[in-house]
Length: 240
Length: 77
Length: 200
Image: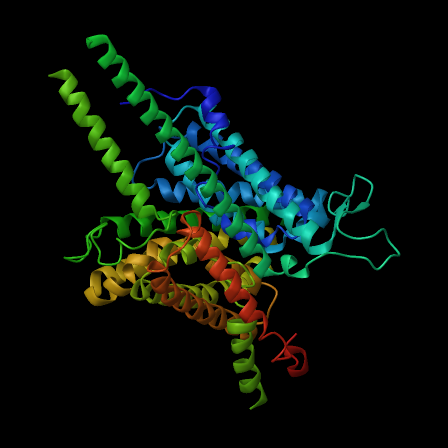
């Protein structure tokens, strides 16, 4: 058995190395649906973080109580409870966010990541580790969908609007690819706001990550080969 | 008080559904698969990459458990 | 007569114009995962169709006649997911017991379907519709799922032999293909105006 990962690794791995969206390619449905607006994506990420954190916490607390046979029904009940809590809270305190996310708040119940973390991590690890894992996955997923939403909103609408969903901050519209209000100038490509744009942006993002990984692998291999050659040369030199 | 009645009905519905789900789940798991399509051996399973599939989570878990047991046995010997 | 026509038009509209995968984004996980063998794609699609129809048939009355009168509309998600999950397990049990051939085509995919967004998404959307429209939604959505997953599997069979850049192999090219399919389906938008048939 290999060594148990440290607490920092448990938290940091899902942020980059094992990012649930960009590396594991899980939870693609909300990642495409709510990313037409940067703010809704952040809001979705926050709700997701809450659900995955709480469900990981409860499931790891109960991991010795739940019989192995019926664990999946138990996980689904726990997750559905927290999704209902999130639904009620968000519709009360942030109705704009709730309306802009629509049915996808309810669909957190069947989110592959939440159930997957419960099954693969929280059911076998301690409470603190599971909390860290939930937090890491939540934040990793949040920044991933926020990045996609940023590209889609800026390229698709030409502007970046803040304060529309989170009504407690003042509403501002930043013109990035378009002129200030009043001018007709705009370099926006509306396709990016439509459903096709979501697929294309996520596809290219995954391809870029794959390319970077391929490049890193190649570099590592070359380095290993060079080190091996150097070691062989040194051994030869030593013999002579 | 009508409010209390509604809360009791709500809890009763949830409990009944959870019991229904648990029973049907256990019954489903206990029923052996027909011959020739056991877990992971199905003709369609090799080409499926659905990451959220519980079959795989289950199979991996079992495999990990088996490995652990074997290694602990070896350690004892 | 006009009711039948509008029912059929609604099905077609949900199937191709407002397609589940390409414009409503339900069920992308299984869409990406399953699709490089036509047979398994069709099996998956049929299983989703069956479960969606059953779930819509069962959940709509539960919501309308039990949850709403008892003032418990907030419990919809948890009730729906439990009903769908039990339904899936029961259907799976019967299929396992009764029919090997049915198990081979549908049964293998049933456990996947509890966590398929399409089923829960349709049922959740149906809470706002009347019975006829929710049935049309369920049938049209699941037929749309079958259609797209089948087309996608056919495309991916071809993609396997294609000479792609290494970085695009696998999921990235699948997503880009899905994006191009979405553009194609966008072209169908507006051929049926549901408003003029009194459906919206």
